[in-house]
Figure 1 (cartoon, helix red, strand yellow):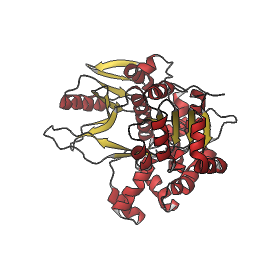
Figure 2 (cartoon, one colour):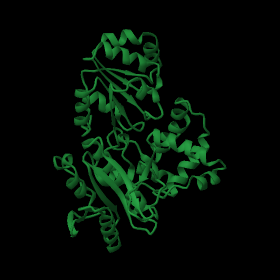
Figure 3 (cartoon, helix red, strand yellow):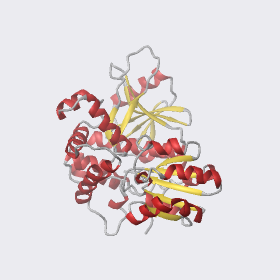
Figure 4 (cartoon, helix red, strand yellow):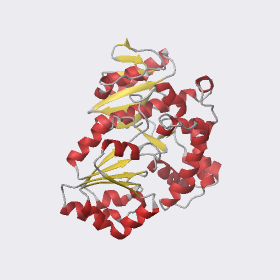
Length: 389
């Protein structure tokens, strides 16, 4: 059974605007299934199949000429294809091509350089809370294989195998020759400091490598959608602001595997990293939904040197919206958010907690479940049945 995805509306919009759409996202996040479901009349070519890869290498021009609508899966495996696509689309502007990839344009520069002005980009995140149960997604992670496959994969078995494939096969195939052991150790260290301000020198010292090597590996993790670097928001406030980004392992299933947390709610809630895990899950869900509704949406965090902070500062449709994320509602979170709103001159803010609907706890400050906050922020959510935790 194929499950509908809310990203379809954004894909359809991009296909009306561009001859080529590049659909990106973490490996196994469901790009291929989504594209085939959303685009049933397209001819699909999977470059993970050696015979298909060879066909496009040798007869790429002929294949492109034979079909007006094409999906090319794992497109990063054949960079030589991009200049060919550029000339083909320039000759046939009514043709449509959808490229699927597991690496960002920053890692595979050929896409942005060869197809500049001809392609729109869409990042497909994991399963949204508008598409499945919030609690299951938080605990097990948002990979479709863990929720929608038959038979359903067990996270304790599937996630370790997934990470080995990413680190030992996928990243080397992108041309990066790195020790999978060091990458695994760094990813584990990031999990144990989840959501902390980055200190690359300290991370490098623990691994026996320098600052620049750590930064390079983080670039790869970010470019393959394993890690999020959440940038600090800079404003001319006359106050000292934190300037280093925060680092997150993006999928909470991967995070829980790296931390050794059993995939049960009771085990997660009793773990010291439960709060960091919940913060990660909420940030990913909110940012993914924001970028589907507003391609120009941006995500930051805000923190002064004196500790006034907002976990997420979302720029949505031109408005800055501060969001605090807590497992339970407490006065310190409300006071801190009020101060952030005062510093930045903002009229509304949100506190995401684990339970409850949504209520105004102070003037302009709304607190409630992730489902409630999402329903308030996004038009898409108001058209869907958002599942509360």
